View 1 (cartoon, helix red, strand yellow):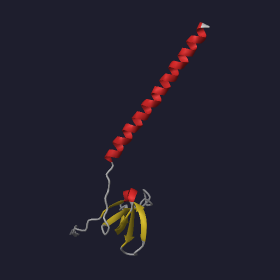
View 2 (cartoon, helix red, strand yellow):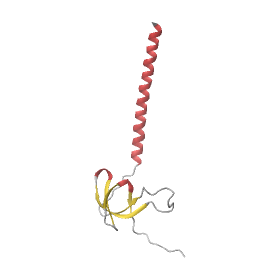
View 3 (cartoon, helix red, strand yellow):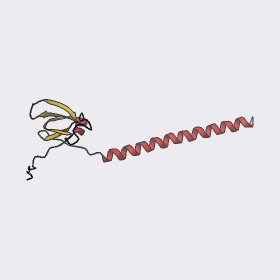
Length: 115
């Protein structure tokens, strides 16, 4: 009888330890998510702004020196939750993309030829 009570108390202790471990894991995940979300840069795009689009279909070894960014495109509409509608300057095609795949296009750079 005494063995059985001792066994039950050990099982309750193990169950408490498991519950504490799950709780600590949940707290850790919440803290790391908050830290990660704080470091993410929120990109704001305006209608009419020129942007470059990241070409994710470009394979790693094909054309290592080719740029992964294509464009420029013009922002035609900005939707909530990060979706952006862009229009190609060359073909005038309009499509929606995730705002994380865009970066601003700066036109102020001059080309210099090296002799």
